[in-house]
Image 1: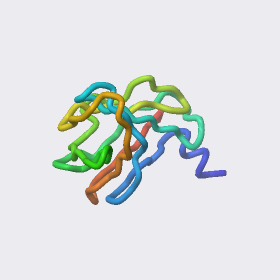
Image 2 (image 1 turned 120 degrees about the vertical axis):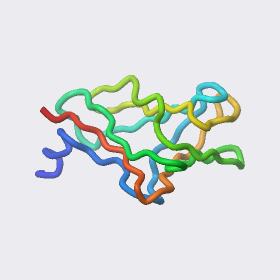
Image 3 (image 1 turned 30 degrees about the vertical axis):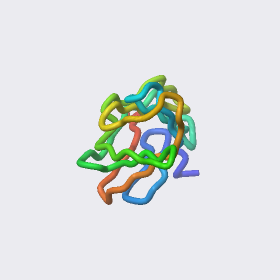
Length: 116
């Protein structure tokens, strides 16, 4: 119960290498979108906190993969229960293709804050 109360203000989705980020899809050939659902309803629409650096994340799809540094386009369609992560950095593929996104660096971090 205490964890759920804390997650209303701050939720860590990914912290470190080898962690699943989300399923994602190419909106167009160079733009990746992924949805994240929060475990509890947050206090307000959150902001993104992320660890960034060279090749922190990988998008696997269609027998290929792209490594990218960060969620360069931030979040969109954010609500108290979910948000989209978006990037156009180092992404290339066929629009409409989906795949799996993982953190591949020990310093990878995706968190959401709705602190006072």
